[in-house]
Length: 397
Image 1 (tube, rainbow, N blue to C red):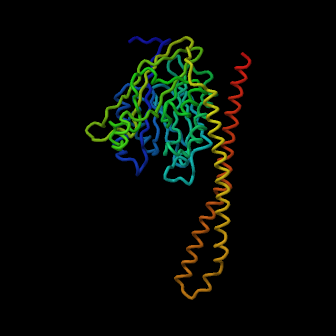
Image 2: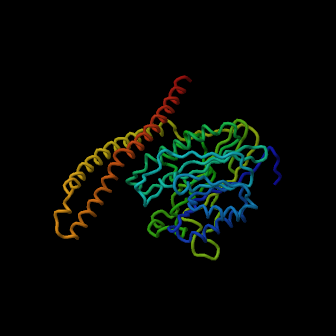
Image 3: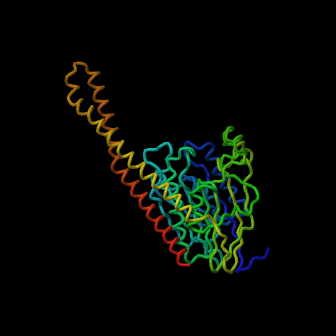
């Protein structure tokens, strides 16, 4: 196929690699296999998530450097953001926006807070086109029926959409790839698409093409595989053209085989997705997306509930701190009144434990509570302002 400077093809891959050291199964084998696929297949840009080990990124960079010579890892938080990008074309600029709300520091078993998650941007020059490629990994949904992170994910979605809106000026096209941890009907998905005005590359496909908990994935529990064989579509490739450039989806698919060659396991617990875009000069015809105003109203209601919950939690933490102070004061000097050294040691150990718990509840009721409350308020005010602007635009037309 003959391609001119006024028309270009962009093949983009995104995959959550499930690369948690000491936790993820078959990690080293899978990372090498993913890197090998990036070399043998025809990709121009690769967006990866959950690359939690920098050594994995360096290994991949060394393997793909001839095919994808340009790369960037977005460092953040305690263990790194986990997101990175490889490109066949020059990366002219990079930027990272860390989300104010990233889960809870005390939820060590979830670990999202330690990643310092956010949205990364690489400005890529593809011949005569400047393309802003974004990569993101929103907070996971650990319990759909009782989702304690719903407000966090909604604000991350709004933050991502705002970041895209405010950095896309001067680009010919915008593409967002990543594990957004939100299904097409969910509020976070509707916020990202609606506020940033993005289209979904999956819209050209007639099949569902789930990306997580799919029956054909070796890491999917049998119970989930039977319940929903197609899995959930929570990994997405979204895009937008400009006044200068048209962008359309030529192909959208699962590019990886079901298993790593000569192994009995999949490349990741997520499925990779690939979109092939055709770019050409001209004005992009925007399709009407989700109802932004209704999505924002729903998001504001979620934030209001979260703010009320934070207020209740602070009261309970303060009550708990008052209760813990009583035995601590009562135990002062108690170890000197007993003739038994074992009891004396036990009293000191118990006091040490109670002191640690007291420090924790004081921290949660003061510093952490204020951080979360202010982050929620900031997001709430920003969404409220955006909604008012939309209403004013409607009333003036």
